[in-house]
Amino acid sequence: MQLPFDNSYARLPERFFSRLAPEPVSQPGPIRVNRPLAEFLGIDADWLGSGEGTEVVAGNRVPEGADPIATVYAGHQFGSWNPQLGDGRALLLGEVIGADGKRYDIQLKGSGRTPYSRMGDGRAPLGPVIREYVVSEAMYALGIPTTRSLAAVTTGDPVYRESALPGGVLARVASSHIRFGTFQFFSSRQDNEALQLLVDHSIERHYPESGDSDNRALALLQQVVARQAALVARWQLVGFIHGVMNTDNMLISGETIDYGPCAFMDDFNAETVYSSIDHGGRYAYQNQPGIAHWNLACFAQTLLPLLDSDENAAVELAQSSIDRFPELFLDAHQSGMGLKLGLTLEGDEDEALVQDLLSVMSESAADFTLTFRALTDRTAAQPGTATVADIFELPDLFSPWLERFEQRAARESQFAGNRREIMSRANPVFIPRNHLVEEAIRAAEDEGDFSVFERLVERLEKPFEYDADDARFALPPRPEQVVRQTFCGT
Ligand code: AMP
Ligand code: MG
Image 1 (cartoon, rainbow, N blue to C red):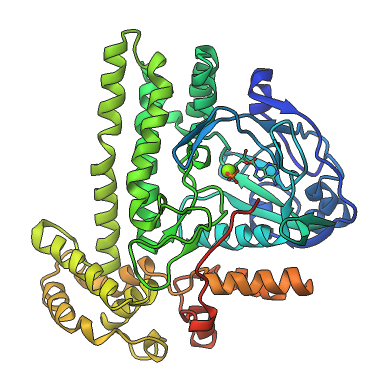
Image 2: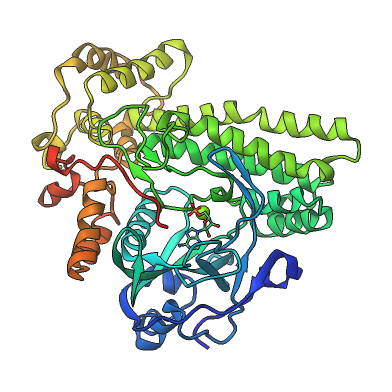
């Protein structure tokens, strides 16, 4: 057996999913296998890249031990309630245990129609497969909790959108695919038994330390609030815009999922939106913490019947748990920003220093990533280390702020000895910039050339180590390369 499956979600009652096989494709072709991830999951990477492994990822062969299911969920999409969603173009093949002893889902995305496809074709064009592979693996390398990409294949079949596009399938890995929307589905049907099963399953998988809690629903809620706060703080600190923070795209595990219209900002502007369908800017960069808070309120609501048999007491528990979000977010953001600046931030003066930095970045439309990297380079730059000085200069507008920064840095005691190291580990130089992702997609879709994609994936594996030979991967886009809009992978 090539995939050591042990499928716990498929052992839940039938109303949690639909059992069905993937729809075969005409001509599976390998694109890439994530070898370290395969090995971590106990999967032979050579096999995964072989003809047989490619057929498994394409959905033409269901491996022994797999129990493919499409899971059901609901959700708020752009604030509007949708009582029935579900895996419309994905199938959970099964679960395996990683080298860390934890359980991981292996899901095929783009594997054909399911009972939840609605009007969709269940397929994914190659472009979104490439985008998700690049960006999810880049997030992993940045140390940000995320679903991952195990392998990608071509299908040989066209996918019809505005035009005919080549199709692909992505094998995605997640600690689980349990969404806020999974809880919402059962909550809206007043199925408390299913909710309890989901709470137990989620705790066992993601929060085993809360297993003995006498109020498991409350323990789960508190943990989910804390992980979301930490996650969104990490997004803000690298300029990541998720783009479609619907409740069905939020995982209980606290991992980033659904790399549809996501993007990293180039110039700093807190109002940035890339998604072509986000007309009101609901999911703009600056709104992400507030939206996460709102999503958590939706999640908390689903747990009310389990929190306390007295309704008022339940509401109070839910409210006090979600009320902790702003503080948890601000703490996580502040300590992360402290690492980026090499300072132990505390007090109003430090707060103003951070706010004024963001203002001057915004006013001068400074590149988000390279600004922090340039600040890193200014801090005890060592002779012989490559700096971004050749490709980026802080705008003149920064001068008064830099003076304050340096005065503050001189008073830093806690990080004093190793500021440069702390800062270079908090400030990536290589991020999946939109124009680079676009370039990889164009080569793959238009020319069937995956070398641009491969090179980008490999370059983004070490985001904190600058190498001047790879300067082109660190550069902001030239005006003609700027990508202003991204599209969902549908
Ligand atoms: P998303 O916007 O990617 O989070 O997807 C929202 C819902 O639409 C989910 O239930 C998806 O499974 C479904 N969906 C998206 N694209 C397709 C497609 N091409 N075919 C079928 N269902 C889809
Ligand atoms: Mg989704």
